[in-house]
Image (cartoon, rainbow, N blue to C red):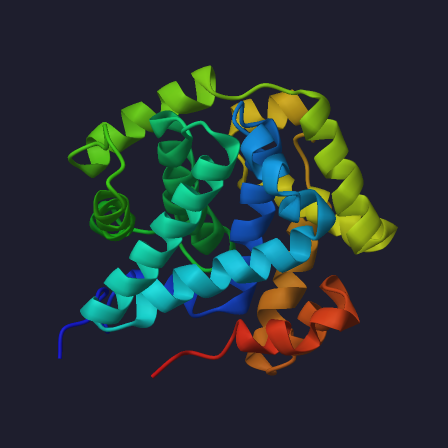
Length: 254
């Protein structure tokens, strides 16, 4: 039986833990707000109307790809491609290739950054493995101009961060939606998590600051995992309406 991602892959470790996924979301939610193509996310209205729902739907697709057999993963990727094509048809325009690459690059970068914040430093080979998995997703989607290897990706990632981000009305409005849907306390936790994982360019544009109040809390959190109490902390971080989705984040597919 052939899987899209082999059973022993570090990518399965990253996407099989809810706390890591939440940090991936924290980083991506910051960068999404700054992307020059963020207006595409506003076109459907789904992201500003329900940013948490958008998170869980995106996570569901990513996890389905990571933990599925090859044929099933390809079906999930093809479905995702068709959804984007439908949005393009409704708007009468094409999403730029660089915008597709940006989203793919976010998945690669925040997978690495989040795991390293919560677990350990990844080796160069493991980082290259994360790149390879999501690069195959991009190739299946037909995204043009993807890098050939991890080293080339590092250079392209820096170029994209420098050229494709700006703070706009959409940026500020999206953060207002985050606060509305999360509440003040959870919103502050989101900002503190973003400080820990976002690149310097993202931090600078959003003026997040250089020190996160979550840094000392992470020590307590890591200890709580040994006592199997991390589910309680997740329940505190995310609203009760998403209780089942929170539990599903930690369910490692067979």
